[in-house]
Length: 101
Image 1: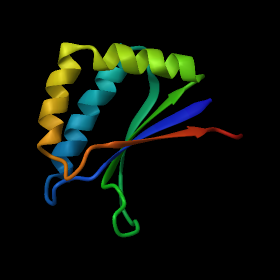
Image 2 (image 1 turned 135 degrees about the vertical axis):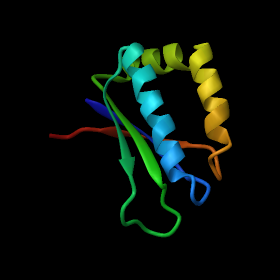
Image 3 (image 1 turned 180 degrees about the vertical axis):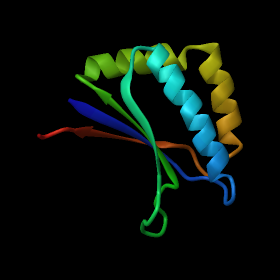
Protein backbone atom coordinates (compact mmCIF):
# COMPACT_ATOMS: atom_id res chain seq x y z
CA UNK A 1 0.00 0.00 0.00
CA UNK A 2 1.18 3.51 -0.84
CA UNK A 3 0.14 6.95 0.33
CA UNK A 4 0.58 9.90 -2.01
CA UNK A 5 0.56 13.38 -0.51
CA UNK A 6 0.37 16.70 -2.31
CA UNK A 7 1.56 19.59 -0.15
CA UNK A 8 0.03 23.03 -0.68
CA UNK A 9 1.48 26.35 0.54
CA UNK A 10 -1.37 28.84 0.39
CA UNK A 11 -1.44 32.59 0.10
CA UNK A 12 -2.22 33.92 3.60
CA UNK A 13 -5.97 34.09 4.18
CA UNK A 14 -6.77 31.75 1.27
CA UNK A 15 -6.49 28.35 3.00
CA UNK A 16 -10.28 27.96 3.24
CA UNK A 17 -10.60 28.40 -0.53
CA UNK A 18 -7.80 25.88 -1.07
CA UNK A 19 -9.58 23.35 1.12
CA UNK A 20 -12.79 23.84 -0.88
CA UNK A 21 -10.84 23.25 -4.10
CA UNK A 22 -9.14 20.17 -2.63
CA UNK A 23 -12.56 18.70 -1.88
CA UNK A 24 -13.33 19.11 -5.57
CA UNK A 25 -10.06 17.34 -6.34
CA UNK A 26 -11.14 14.49 -4.06
CA UNK A 27 -14.31 14.10 -6.15
CA UNK A 28 -12.23 14.02 -9.36
CA UNK A 29 -9.86 11.43 -7.86
CA UNK A 30 -12.85 9.28 -6.91
CA UNK A 31 -14.13 9.50 -10.51
CA UNK A 32 -10.68 8.37 -11.71
CA UNK A 33 -10.92 5.27 -9.50
CA UNK A 34 -8.93 6.54 -6.54
CA UNK A 35 -9.89 5.79 -2.98
CA UNK A 36 -8.94 6.80 0.52
CA UNK A 37 -8.51 10.44 -0.51
CA UNK A 38 -8.72 13.09 2.18
CA UNK A 39 -7.92 16.73 2.82
CA UNK A 40 -5.74 17.66 5.80
CA UNK A 41 -5.39 21.13 7.32
CA UNK A 42 -2.21 21.96 9.21
CA UNK A 43 -2.92 22.77 12.84
CA UNK A 44 0.58 23.00 14.34
CA UNK A 45 3.65 22.74 12.11
CA UNK A 46 7.20 23.93 11.69
CA UNK A 47 7.91 27.16 9.86
CA UNK A 48 7.67 26.59 6.12
CA UNK A 49 5.38 23.56 6.36
CA UNK A 50 2.45 23.18 3.99
CA UNK A 51 -0.92 24.67 4.98
CA UNK A 52 -3.06 21.96 3.39
CA UNK A 53 -2.36 18.41 2.26
CA UNK A 54 -4.20 16.19 -0.18
CA UNK A 55 -3.66 12.54 0.65
CA UNK A 56 -4.64 9.49 -1.36
CA UNK A 57 -4.04 5.75 -0.99
CA UNK A 58 -3.16 3.31 -3.74
CA UNK A 59 -2.48 -0.43 -3.64
CA UNK A 60 0.58 -0.11 -5.93
CA UNK A 61 2.51 2.42 -7.99
CA UNK A 62 1.08 1.29 -11.32
CA UNK A 63 -2.46 1.98 -10.11
CA UNK A 64 -1.47 5.37 -8.71
CA UNK A 65 0.25 6.38 -11.95
CA UNK A 66 -2.77 5.30 -14.00
CA UNK A 67 -5.12 7.34 -11.79
CA UNK A 68 -2.86 10.40 -11.92
CA UNK A 69 -2.63 10.19 -15.72
CA UNK A 70 -6.39 9.78 -16.11
CA UNK A 71 -7.03 12.70 -13.77
CA UNK A 72 -4.46 15.16 -15.12
CA UNK A 73 -5.48 14.59 -18.75
CA UNK A 74 -9.07 15.70 -18.10
CA UNK A 75 -10.32 19.19 -18.96
CA UNK A 76 -11.98 19.40 -15.54
CA UNK A 77 -8.59 18.96 -13.84
CA UNK A 78 -6.91 21.48 -16.15
CA UNK A 79 -9.50 24.13 -15.20
CA UNK A 80 -9.19 23.22 -11.53
CA UNK A 81 -5.40 23.53 -11.71
CA UNK A 82 -5.64 27.05 -13.14
CA UNK A 83 -7.92 28.14 -10.30
CA UNK A 84 -5.66 26.55 -7.68
CA UNK A 85 -2.46 28.16 -8.93
CA UNK A 86 -3.81 31.62 -8.08
CA UNK A 87 -4.27 30.54 -4.43
CA UNK A 88 -0.75 29.20 -3.85
CA UNK A 89 2.64 30.71 -3.05
CA UNK A 90 4.47 27.85 -4.81
CA UNK A 91 3.77 24.75 -6.86
CA UNK A 92 2.47 21.75 -4.91
CA UNK A 93 5.03 19.12 -3.96
CA UNK A 94 4.31 15.39 -4.01
CA UNK A 95 5.51 12.93 -1.40
CA UNK A 96 5.06 9.18 -1.76
CA UNK A 97 5.14 6.83 1.21
CA UNK A 98 5.12 3.06 1.58
CA UNK A 99 2.72 2.00 4.32
CA UNK A 100 4.46 -0.38 6.74
CA UNK A 101 1.75 -1.86 8.96
